[in-house]
Image 1: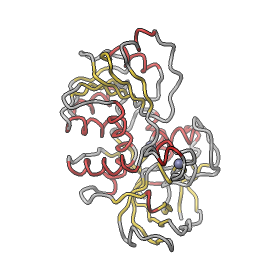
Image 2 (image 1 turned 30 degrees about the horizontal axis):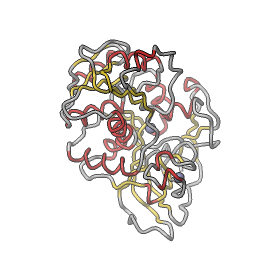
Image 3 (image 1 turned 30 degrees about the vertical axis):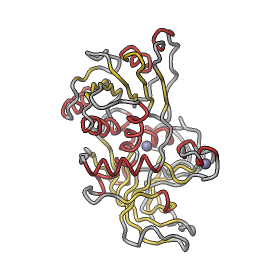
Length: 331
Ligand SMILES: [Zn+2]
Ligand SMILES: [Zn+2]
Protein backbone atom coordinates (compact mmCIF):
# COMPACT_ATOMS: atom_id res chain seq x y z
CA UNK A 1 0.00 0.00 0.00
CA UNK A 2 0.97 3.64 -0.36
CA UNK A 3 1.71 5.54 2.85
CA UNK A 4 3.38 8.72 4.09
CA UNK A 5 6.12 7.47 6.39
CA UNK A 6 8.17 9.47 8.89
CA UNK A 7 11.64 7.95 9.36
CA UNK A 8 12.72 10.50 11.97
CA UNK A 9 11.41 13.92 13.03
CA UNK A 10 12.59 16.99 11.12
CA UNK A 11 11.36 20.45 10.17
CA UNK A 12 8.35 20.23 7.88
CA UNK A 13 10.24 22.55 5.51
CA UNK A 14 12.48 19.56 4.67
CA UNK A 15 9.43 17.42 3.70
CA UNK A 16 10.27 14.57 6.11
CA UNK A 17 7.30 12.38 5.11
CA UNK A 18 8.23 9.90 2.38
CA UNK A 19 5.41 8.70 0.10
CA UNK A 20 6.38 5.05 -0.33
CA UNK A 21 5.09 1.47 -0.59
CA UNK A 22 4.79 -0.48 2.66
CA UNK A 23 3.05 -3.77 3.54
CA UNK A 24 -0.67 -3.68 4.34
CA UNK A 25 -0.98 -4.20 8.13
CA UNK A 26 -2.44 -7.46 9.49
CA UNK A 27 -5.37 -7.14 11.89
CA UNK A 28 -4.92 -8.90 15.24
CA UNK A 29 -7.75 -11.00 16.77
CA UNK A 30 -9.57 -7.95 18.20
CA UNK A 31 -8.72 -5.61 15.33
CA UNK A 32 -10.31 -4.54 12.06
CA UNK A 33 -8.52 -3.68 8.83
CA UNK A 34 -9.84 -0.44 7.35
CA UNK A 35 -9.50 0.87 3.81
CA UNK A 36 -8.82 4.59 4.47
CA UNK A 37 -10.85 7.12 2.44
CA UNK A 38 -9.96 10.33 4.26
CA UNK A 39 -7.56 11.36 7.02
CA UNK A 40 -7.67 14.73 8.73
CA UNK A 41 -4.46 16.67 9.34
CA UNK A 42 -4.04 17.81 12.95
CA UNK A 43 -1.55 20.10 14.67
CA UNK A 44 -0.51 17.10 16.76
CA UNK A 45 0.70 15.45 13.53
CA UNK A 46 2.93 18.48 13.04
CA UNK A 47 4.27 18.04 16.60
CA UNK A 48 5.00 14.37 15.81
CA UNK A 49 6.65 15.14 12.46
CA UNK A 50 8.78 18.00 13.81
CA UNK A 51 9.69 16.20 17.04
CA UNK A 52 8.08 18.44 19.66
CA UNK A 53 6.59 15.16 20.85
CA UNK A 54 9.44 12.70 21.49
CA UNK A 55 9.43 9.80 18.97
CA UNK A 56 7.66 6.70 20.31
CA UNK A 57 7.77 4.58 17.14
CA UNK A 58 10.21 4.87 14.26
CA UNK A 59 9.42 4.81 11.44
CA UNK A 60 5.81 5.84 11.96
CA UNK A 61 2.82 6.69 9.76
CA UNK A 62 1.07 9.78 11.23
CA UNK A 63 -2.63 10.59 11.15
CA UNK A 64 -5.41 10.08 13.68
CA UNK A 65 -8.62 11.38 12.07
CA UNK A 66 -9.35 8.42 9.86
CA UNK A 67 -12.55 7.61 7.98
CA UNK A 68 -12.78 4.41 5.97
CA UNK A 69 -14.56 1.11 5.48
CA UNK A 70 -13.89 -2.21 7.17
CA UNK A 71 -12.34 -4.68 4.73
CA UNK A 72 -11.36 -7.51 7.11
CA UNK A 73 -12.18 -8.43 10.67
CA UNK A 74 -10.03 -10.22 13.24
CA UNK A 75 -11.11 -13.64 14.55
CA UNK A 76 -12.43 -12.31 17.88
CA UNK A 77 -14.24 -9.21 16.57
CA UNK A 78 -18.02 -8.84 16.44
CA UNK A 79 -18.84 -5.14 16.41
CA UNK A 80 -18.47 -4.17 12.73
CA UNK A 81 -19.26 -6.05 9.52
CA UNK A 82 -17.10 -5.87 6.41
CA UNK A 83 -18.20 -2.75 4.51
CA UNK A 84 -19.17 -0.73 7.62
CA UNK A 85 -18.00 2.89 7.64
CA UNK A 86 -15.92 3.66 10.72
CA UNK A 87 -13.70 6.36 12.18
CA UNK A 88 -10.40 5.98 14.03
CA UNK A 89 -9.24 8.69 16.42
CA UNK A 90 -6.16 9.48 18.54
CA UNK A 91 -6.97 7.05 21.36
CA UNK A 92 -5.96 3.78 19.72
CA UNK A 93 -6.50 1.67 22.82
CA UNK A 94 -6.13 1.80 26.58
CA UNK A 95 -5.05 -0.82 29.13
CA UNK A 96 -8.48 -1.17 30.76
CA UNK A 97 -7.01 -2.04 34.17
CA UNK A 98 -5.13 1.00 35.52
CA UNK A 99 -6.76 3.26 38.13
CA UNK A 100 -7.68 5.82 35.43
CA UNK A 101 -9.30 3.28 33.13
CA UNK A 102 -11.23 1.80 36.04
CA UNK A 103 -12.56 5.20 37.17
CA UNK A 104 -14.00 6.38 33.84
CA UNK A 105 -10.93 8.44 32.94
CA UNK A 106 -9.42 6.31 30.21
CA UNK A 107 -8.12 9.50 28.55
CA UNK A 108 -5.49 9.49 31.35
CA UNK A 109 -4.60 5.76 30.97
CA UNK A 110 -1.11 4.79 32.18
CA UNK A 111 -0.42 2.53 29.19
CA UNK A 112 -2.30 3.89 26.18
CA UNK A 113 -1.55 3.57 22.48
CA UNK A 114 -2.05 6.59 20.25
CA UNK A 115 -2.92 6.42 16.56
CA UNK A 116 -0.27 7.91 14.31
CA UNK A 117 2.21 8.26 17.17
CA UNK A 118 2.85 5.04 19.13
CA UNK A 119 1.18 2.92 16.41
CA UNK A 120 0.79 3.60 12.68
CA UNK A 121 -1.94 6.03 11.65
CA UNK A 122 -4.04 7.01 8.69
CA UNK A 123 -1.72 8.77 6.23
CA UNK A 124 -1.98 5.48 4.35
CA UNK A 125 -4.31 3.36 2.27
CA UNK A 126 -4.99 0.93 5.13
CA UNK A 127 -4.93 1.05 8.91
CA UNK A 128 -5.73 -1.45 11.66
CA UNK A 129 -7.71 -0.46 14.74
CA UNK A 130 -9.05 -2.15 17.84
CA UNK A 131 -12.76 -2.51 17.14
CA UNK A 132 -13.73 -1.23 20.60
CA UNK A 133 -12.00 2.09 19.90
CA UNK A 134 -13.48 2.68 16.43
CA UNK A 135 -16.56 4.85 15.93
CA UNK A 136 -19.50 4.36 13.59
CA UNK A 137 -19.70 7.50 11.41
CA UNK A 138 -23.15 9.15 11.23
CA UNK A 139 -24.71 8.91 7.75
CA UNK A 140 -25.12 12.66 7.20
CA UNK A 141 -21.40 13.31 6.80
CA UNK A 142 -19.26 12.62 3.74
CA UNK A 143 -15.92 10.93 4.41
CA UNK A 144 -14.09 14.23 3.91
CA UNK A 145 -16.47 16.20 6.13
CA UNK A 146 -16.36 13.57 8.89
CA UNK A 147 -12.57 13.31 9.19
CA UNK A 148 -12.00 16.56 11.15
CA UNK A 149 -14.69 15.55 13.63
CA UNK A 150 -12.46 12.75 14.93
CA UNK A 151 -9.86 14.93 16.66
CA UNK A 152 -10.52 18.62 16.02
CA UNK A 153 -14.17 17.93 16.82
CA UNK A 154 -13.82 15.53 19.73
CA UNK A 155 -11.01 17.46 21.44
CA UNK A 156 -12.85 20.74 20.88
CA UNK A 157 -15.91 19.16 22.49
CA UNK A 158 -13.95 17.85 25.48
CA UNK A 159 -12.34 21.29 25.81
CA UNK A 160 -15.81 22.86 25.97
CA UNK A 161 -16.77 20.39 28.71
CA UNK A 162 -13.54 20.99 30.66
CA UNK A 163 -13.96 24.77 30.38
CA UNK A 164 -17.21 24.52 32.37
CA UNK A 165 -18.96 26.94 29.98
CA UNK A 166 -22.72 27.06 30.54
CA UNK A 167 -25.57 27.89 28.14
CA UNK A 168 -25.89 31.65 27.80
CA UNK A 169 -22.25 32.25 28.79
CA UNK A 170 -19.45 34.04 26.98
CA UNK A 171 -16.49 32.05 25.68
CA UNK A 172 -13.09 33.09 24.33
CA UNK A 173 -11.44 30.89 21.71
CA UNK A 174 -7.69 31.48 21.27
CA UNK A 175 -6.53 30.21 17.89
CA UNK A 176 -9.11 29.58 15.20
CA UNK A 177 -8.11 26.49 13.23
CA UNK A 178 -9.83 23.16 12.77
CA UNK A 179 -10.85 22.59 16.41
CA UNK A 180 -12.22 26.09 16.98
CA UNK A 181 -14.22 26.10 13.76
CA UNK A 182 -16.12 23.06 15.05
CA UNK A 183 -16.27 24.13 18.73
CA UNK A 184 -17.91 27.46 17.82
CA UNK A 185 -20.78 25.58 16.19
CA UNK A 186 -21.35 23.49 19.31
CA UNK A 187 -21.10 26.63 21.47
CA UNK A 188 -23.72 28.44 19.39
CA UNK A 189 -25.96 25.38 19.60
CA UNK A 190 -25.75 25.79 23.39
CA UNK A 191 -26.56 29.52 23.23
CA UNK A 192 -23.03 30.68 24.04
CA UNK A 193 -21.52 33.94 22.72
CA UNK A 194 -18.05 33.43 21.25
CA UNK A 195 -15.14 35.83 20.92
CA UNK A 196 -12.23 34.68 18.73
CA UNK A 197 -8.62 35.76 19.31
CA UNK A 198 -6.26 34.62 16.55
CA UNK A 199 -3.17 35.98 14.82
CA UNK A 200 -4.17 35.44 11.19
CA UNK A 201 -6.76 37.74 9.55
CA UNK A 202 -8.05 34.85 7.39
CA UNK A 203 -8.89 32.95 10.57
CA UNK A 204 -10.59 36.02 12.07
CA UNK A 205 -12.65 36.24 8.88
CA UNK A 206 -13.70 32.59 9.19
CA UNK A 207 -14.65 33.17 12.85
CA UNK A 208 -16.92 36.10 11.86
CA UNK A 209 -18.50 34.05 9.07
CA UNK A 210 -19.24 31.32 11.61
CA UNK A 211 -20.99 33.83 13.83
CA UNK A 212 -18.35 34.93 16.34
CA UNK A 213 -19.63 38.04 18.16
CA UNK A 214 -16.17 39.59 17.80
CA UNK A 215 -12.75 38.60 16.45
CA UNK A 216 -9.40 40.21 17.26
CA UNK A 217 -5.66 39.67 17.41
CA UNK A 218 -4.18 36.70 19.29
CA UNK A 219 -3.40 38.69 22.43
CA UNK A 220 -6.30 41.19 22.15
CA UNK A 221 -8.68 41.82 25.03
CA UNK A 222 -12.23 40.82 24.05
CA UNK A 223 -14.87 43.56 24.44
CA UNK A 224 -16.37 41.90 27.55
CA UNK A 225 -15.00 39.67 30.28
CA UNK A 226 -15.50 35.98 29.45
CA UNK A 227 -16.83 33.09 31.56
CA UNK A 228 -14.36 30.61 30.08
CA UNK A 229 -11.53 30.39 27.57
CA UNK A 230 -10.16 27.60 25.40
CA UNK A 231 -6.64 27.96 24.04
CA UNK A 232 -6.08 25.90 20.90
CA UNK A 233 -2.93 27.75 19.75
CA UNK A 234 0.28 26.20 21.17
CA UNK A 235 1.55 29.51 22.58
CA UNK A 236 2.04 29.67 26.36
CA UNK A 237 1.83 33.48 26.54
CA UNK A 238 -1.85 33.23 25.58
CA UNK A 239 -2.54 31.81 29.05
CA UNK A 240 -1.73 35.25 30.46
CA UNK A 241 -3.97 37.01 27.89
CA UNK A 242 -6.83 34.63 28.62
CA UNK A 243 -6.55 35.09 32.39
CA UNK A 244 -6.72 38.87 31.90
CA UNK A 245 -9.99 38.46 30.02
CA UNK A 246 -11.50 35.91 32.42
CA UNK A 247 -14.22 36.54 35.01
CA UNK A 248 -13.77 35.41 38.61
CA UNK A 249 -14.20 31.67 39.01
CA UNK A 250 -13.65 31.05 35.29
CA UNK A 251 -11.56 28.33 33.65
CA UNK A 252 -8.91 28.52 30.95
CA UNK A 253 -8.83 25.14 29.17
CA UNK A 254 -5.69 24.28 27.20
CA UNK A 255 -6.74 22.16 24.23
CA UNK A 256 -3.36 21.15 22.78
CA UNK A 257 -0.95 18.31 23.51
CA UNK A 258 2.03 20.67 23.25
CA UNK A 259 2.45 24.30 24.30
CA UNK A 260 5.45 26.62 24.54
CA UNK A 261 6.45 27.69 28.06
CA UNK A 262 3.85 29.60 30.07
CA UNK A 263 5.39 32.86 31.34
CA UNK A 264 5.44 33.65 35.09
CA UNK A 265 2.03 34.82 36.31
CA UNK A 266 1.08 37.52 38.77
CA UNK A 267 -0.95 35.67 41.36
CA UNK A 268 -3.71 38.26 41.16
CA UNK A 269 -4.42 37.06 37.57
CA UNK A 270 -5.19 33.60 38.95
CA UNK A 271 -6.74 34.62 42.27
CA UNK A 272 -10.53 34.62 42.72
CA UNK A 273 -10.65 30.92 41.97
CA UNK A 274 -9.69 31.10 38.33
CA UNK A 275 -8.54 27.71 37.01
CA UNK A 276 -6.02 26.70 34.35
CA UNK A 277 -6.67 23.16 33.16
CA UNK A 278 -5.20 21.08 30.35
CA UNK A 279 -7.16 18.70 28.15
CA UNK A 280 -5.51 15.32 27.61
CA UNK A 281 -6.88 12.99 24.93
CA UNK A 282 -10.52 11.97 25.22
CA UNK A 283 -12.64 9.13 26.45
CA UNK A 284 -14.71 7.05 24.06
CA UNK A 285 -17.74 8.56 25.77
CA UNK A 286 -16.59 12.05 24.67
CA UNK A 287 -16.29 10.77 21.11
CA UNK A 288 -19.69 9.07 21.08
CA UNK A 289 -21.46 12.05 22.69
CA UNK A 290 -19.81 14.47 20.30
CA UNK A 291 -20.59 12.50 17.12
CA UNK A 292 -24.24 12.28 18.19
CA UNK A 293 -24.44 16.05 18.80
CA UNK A 294 -22.49 16.78 15.61
CA UNK A 295 -25.12 14.88 13.61
CA UNK A 296 -27.99 16.58 15.46
CA UNK A 297 -26.80 20.18 14.95
CA UNK A 298 -25.54 19.33 12.23
CA UNK A 299 -21.92 20.53 12.22
CA UNK A 300 -20.61 21.83 8.90
CA UNK A 301 -16.86 21.32 8.62
CA UNK A 302 -14.92 23.49 6.18
CA UNK A 303 -12.38 21.27 4.55
CA UNK A 304 -9.33 22.01 2.45
CA UNK A 305 -8.51 18.86 0.51
CA UNK A 306 -5.06 17.47 -0.34
CA UNK A 307 -4.08 14.19 -2.04
CA UNK A 308 -2.36 11.68 0.28
CA UNK A 309 0.96 12.24 -1.49
CA UNK A 310 0.83 15.95 -0.51
CA UNK A 311 0.82 15.45 3.26
CA UNK A 312 4.03 17.47 3.67
CA UNK A 313 2.42 20.43 1.89
CA UNK A 314 -0.73 20.17 4.01
CA UNK A 315 1.33 20.23 7.23
CA UNK A 316 3.41 23.17 5.97
CA UNK A 317 0.25 25.15 5.29
CA UNK A 318 -1.13 24.23 8.71
CA UNK A 319 2.07 25.49 10.33
CA UNK A 320 1.74 28.82 8.53
CA UNK A 321 -1.97 29.36 9.34
CA UNK A 322 -2.79 28.96 5.65
CA UNK A 323 -5.51 26.31 6.07
CA UNK A 324 -9.10 27.53 6.19
CA UNK A 325 -10.99 25.23 8.55
CA UNK A 326 -9.48 21.75 8.46
CA UNK A 327 -6.97 20.12 6.12
CA UNK A 328 -7.95 16.60 5.04
CA UNK A 329 -6.04 14.07 2.95
CA UNK A 330 -8.11 12.25 0.33
CA UNK A 331 -6.79 8.69 0.20
ZN1 LIG B 1 -5.36 2.29 31.60
ZN1 LIG C 1 -5.39 15.64 16.73
